[in-house]
Image (cartoon, rainbow, N blue to C red; front, side):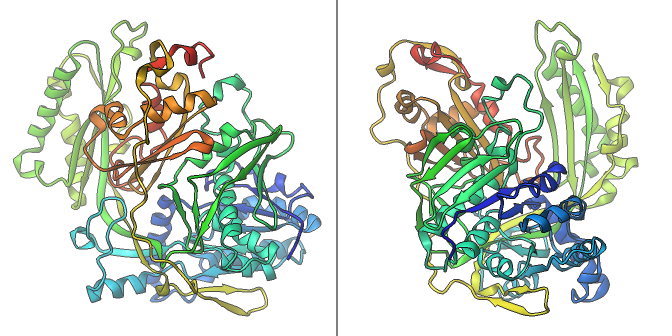
Length: 613
C-alpha cells in the first residue's frame, strides 16, 4: 500500500476530445497514471453493431485481435507522440478506447510501442460483451429485462438485439495496472478507470468501501475531461473569450480516500467549487452513484476551495456494490431521414400547417401510416422586431423513421418533401443540402440490468497470463428506486423580500446531461444565503411549470445536496429513446439546463443586485 497520494489525470471525455491532451500530460513527471474515456452510449451502439457484423462474417470473435475495427483507432494516434514521455516519466495509462474490440486495440498499441523501440507492456480487459448470455436470458423467458428509463418490459420492444455490452467495475483495471504499463478496456464504467488505478496504487480490496466510493467520485470528476475545469460552465462569460485551451483535470487520491481536484498547469480555465459542482451534478441519477464494484452516496458531499485551482472533496459515504450491472442492448431500428424547410415572417403556424398538409398528401394514405415516426418540428421562433431576415426565420424539421428503408429512399421521402415547392405558402425556402433527406440506417438502444454473475471478466497480461476477476463477494440487493423528495420545511416566497422578474439563470448555475433517454438536471447557487430560496423554489411541480409544453407527464425525481447548495432532478425518459434513435435536437440533454435557466421567475432583488451570472 502506498502512503503517497495517487496523482491521476483525465485526458479524454470522448473520442472527439482534443488530441494534445495525452502527450502534454505525459510530460508531467508528477503524474502516476493518465486515464481516458473514449466511450459513450452512442459508441457502444456503433462498435457493438460492428462487432456483431464481424462475428457474423467470421463465425466467432476469437480472432478479433487481428481485426482492426470496432475500437477507437484515434487512441493510437493520440498515444503515439506520448509514448516516449510515458516511458521516461514512468506514467501508466488506462483507457476504455477498446470499444467492442479491446484485444484488437491492444495489438495495435503493441505495434507502435515496438516501432519506437520501447519496452512498455500492454494488457487488456474483456468480459463486457455478454451478447450470448443475454440472448440465453431472452430465450429462457425468465428475465423481464425491464428498461431502466421507460420502465417498459423487454417483451414490448419490437426489435431483436444484435449486441449486449455491460459496464465492468474496477478490479480488472486494478489487476491489469499491477502488471502492465498500458491497459486497454472496452466498456468499463467511465469512473472505473480512476477507481481501479487508486485501488492498485493503494492496495485497496473490495472491503475498502469508503475509500473506493471517494475514488469513484474522483473518477466522475475527471472522466469528462474539461467539464471540471470550465467546459459547459454557466459562468463562462467571466473568461471573455480567453478559454480557448482549457486545462485537463488532475485528481489527488490519498490512501484514506481523500480527494483533491487540480488543474493542468499553464492552461486556461479553472478548478473551483463552481466548476467541480457543475461536473458533479452532470449525468448522476440520484443520491446513489452506482458502479459494479461500489456505490457512493452523494447526498452529504462537501466541496472546499483550499487553494487557487484546488478543490477538496469530502462527505462521500460508501455502500456495497449491487448484485446487478447495467447493460446496453443494440438492435437495428430501420432507416431515418430528415428534411429542413425555412419559413419566414408572419403566420408561421399557418405556414407550417399548410406545408405539413401538402407533404402528407404527397405521401398518400398508403404511405403516411407506414412510418414508425413522422414529426414536423418547429425549431426557433421569429423575432417580431427582427433586424435581419435570418432572425425572422424558423426551421421546419421534417423527421422520419421507418422499418422499411424503401420508404426513405430518395424517390420517396425526399421527393415528397420537395415536390410542393411551387405550390407552397409564401416565405418558404427548402434546404440547399438534401443529403439528410436520404434514408440511412439507425440503431435502437435498450438499457437494463443483469446479474453480475452473468459477467466473466478477465485480464490478459503482456506475458500471456490470463487473470479471472470474480464478481463481488458480498453485494447488496438494491430495489432500483432512488430516494426522491421535495424539500422539507420550504420557506414562504416573501422570506427574502421584494422580487424582480428575471431569468432563473441570472442567479442560478446548472448543468444537464443524459443517460440513455433519461435527462438529469442539476441547479446550484453561489452564496449560502441563496440556498433556502433555491430549495424552497425548485420543487418538482415548479420544474414541470418551467418545462411547459415539454413536460409530457413522465416521472420526475428530485433530491438535494445541501453541502454544495444543489438541487438535482432526474427526468425519466425525457429524451425520446436517447442519442442513437431519438428525434429531438438536444439528443444528449446538454441544452436542457440552458432552456430552464432562461425561463423568467421571481428572483429576490437582493440576490439579483448582488450581481448576475
